[in-house]
Length: 89
Image (tube, rainbow, N blue to C red; front, side):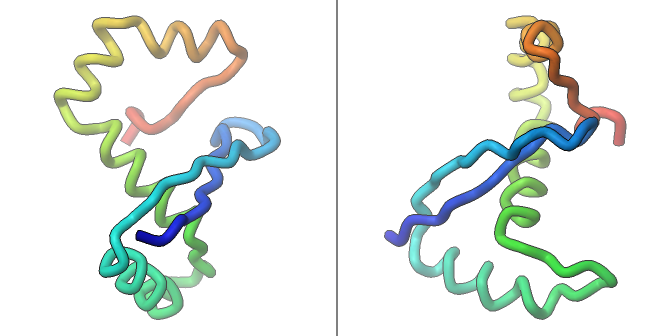
């Protein structure tokens, strides 16, 4: 497995990004790195963009959204002065 550094930030304001590290299988690494330059849809995609989109999709899964609601994690996010728009879509 290769290490992949991912960076995430609050979408509401320009906040200093947080580094997020993950290890991915070599096949995933290869396919993502090969696809990023091909996905030129008027935006220069980065590995961070891909990781942010993938993790936002994961957070939108019903079982994860339910856990976020049950444990009041959106309120906890607000208490830290942060917000999210991932559930507005």
